[in-house]
Length: 72
Image (tube, rainbow, N blue to C red):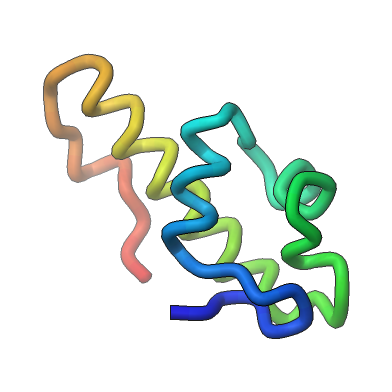
């Protein structure tokens, strides 16, 4: 699913950037341009980025923590 229409960015793209260390929407914008256009996607980008980081941390720790993820 596309989250940013100004600079086409998918959830998979965001997960990949999260795995590369991106932690904020501003960093994401510098990396791939997402969120730097109209800004309508900022909230969704932040949620998906947060969830990707939580899942990444869980997989590294080997334990799930659903309470830390944010529903979309």
